Image (cartoon, rainbow, N blue to C red; front, side, top):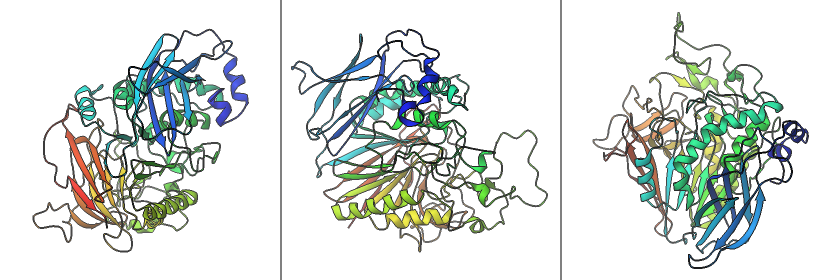
Length: 529
């Protein structure tokens, strides 16, 4: 992007607002990079330590990209790109990339240098290894042992499913940009957190493609019902984003700018961009979704807290929910559904249906990647019902699952601080795809799957919390396992030749260090016809 990201994504007056506080800046240092390659188009996003509140006088600083095919060859300059001061990034796009050839890359900014490897894309008949991560609170940072184990897996692809940062971590209290003028200050505050994430995971991302999607905390929202990219006008349960759309676009770009081109970038609502897209890599197809941005708000069907008669919230409670969590154990949550309520939104539903059909036609395998599981599988209590869960709205959830249909795919999500594995049902049990909620990497693993009644039709000697259940919203889900109380990460092996996908759970202890324990339900191998 050749000028300010604000200019490209929101309104031209943004540059004027930034230029009013212009001063000389020091040479920027390269911090880390992330890249992704889709059908011969390479995108490399370089992160630098530039200050978004400082505008450089004169020509913009640039980052230069050079490539070579072996370590014995001289570097060949490819191009240079200006640093976008607001996001502190430089984005490179290379068309007609030789996708099955390994190349070395080198990016420089002044005296700052970073090198890495653009991997050769695995061939279709090889086994594609993906590592999947979720929820990175600063507990145990920088997680050297766990990240060392991740690198030792030598994955082909990395998936971060959201909550890469939490808004008040690393001794940096959140500042929400409410006005256009506050956006640079808001980005400086955001980058204080995101740069800690990049410092920890930069080595994992250096030599392999990265898929990253944003969840609520990444955009400084504690729960998010995006309502198609609208601005929050009241309490959070009325929906919308709590910050200026220019800030949302800039923050999301720092995490998703290397993804394949979006299907429908917008802008949507009040000017917020969308990044949902598809990726084909190693013969595996990925649908990269946004199941927060277009979701309806609970205030459309809940007007006051649904709680047992006589219930009062404690004065000094530690939770901050309002009306979004149903507390009455006898309340029928199917009453909270309406056909017009959205989970993905109409355009994204249509994209998912088209993508699923193409996966079936390709004869290959796939995965649907989104922020949060589409069933109420992580409980604060066995009887509560949280509309932050993508079990709600039920009609939107069911339309999305029908869009997937019987495509040979698995679903991967994060968000809920709990590793779970099961299979969705729509019209009947087990007519939907397998779903894997990735365990929390470092956030507290305080939620659990602890239903009151044992599951039906579970396997012999299987735990009672497995089998067939109607979740608190009445959705059908068959549970295979739950890693209650465990942190960790996932490894997924896509074997396109033998048409299997294996889902693994790699646990970590309270110190966020890897441990070797069996977690019932994993590994799970899904065989496709």
